[in-house]
Image 1 (cartoon, rainbow, N blue to C red):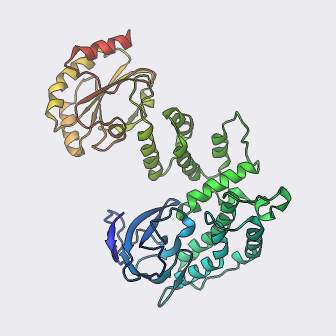
Image 2: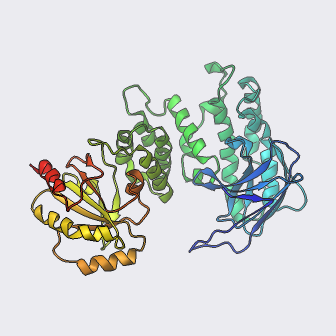
Image 3: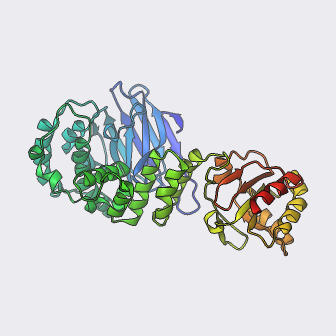
Length: 449
């Protein structure tokens, strides 16, 4: 998050699409809740802060280049609750004039039809939004009538906008936001709970699978709505949650959309307590991890779960060789793996290189795989070096770059670094003796014999 007084200027230099015209937000507030205002973007169903502006004399402002046309949010650093944030529509050349408070906002001055209609719709749902505020005063006795009154008004709500992209996004938002608020209320801590016969038909007739699709990715509450939908579907016995069964897998199987299955897996990873938890859930469902963002978030969790104690599972990895072929722990299953972390610029690495090559030759006809994993940031330098060494070496050269999952997981801060993994994928050592030390050979011999 960038601390920028009054005006936050964000430049995104992407190699593909670069916005040419900025969006301007001119804001005011008299609410003491706002000492500073945060601008959020939507990243695959969750909100991420991209800038913040201090409130000076009741005013704040943003000038930024939108990376996409769609929903953004304004809120405060004092809460993580999406219900306390205001959804706005962002695109190139948009100018938004807005006055915000902790619970609501109003547009003033000149604004686009997109944002005017978005304001009207959010105002219509303001009582529902207040109902899901943590610590709010509403019980189901007050909330259910609000839901029933609003339900027939959602679909007919029309916008005056001529922006086709907005129209498409807004049609999704209307239905999803209404049902998101309704479902969120069901799972908030309450002072009083309805009996089964008091629960209104909207909840009983909810088609959960209708909302479990990739529309969740463009909505600021997408991940949250996803979890509420899956939990509620389980409570309504749309899939089995019986004790002793794999409840998480049953939920994954219930979700119809492959990408959203992946989103759900990433969300569940927040509850993983061990690498075994990761293996049990992620590995059988890896085909559903179709977004780079999903892999990135899972890898971040995996790094935290990694343990370097002998006997623990060595975490999986995937790195390419010079021809682009991918190698992983799984693809080498059944082999003892000896890893050399090195780089072309590393003098001590090159000093150990002849010893590593000789060691690898000793085990040519045995189930021992030798990997030379480069941490070179400059891939071209690595390719040039490896091509010059091509020959009949019993070593597989892979490129991981300077930032990679194994370096993070096992705190590889200096190179060379050598590791040994047994044929079952368990750690023997994540910091073995160097190849010039006979102790490394002795260690491998014990595993082979």
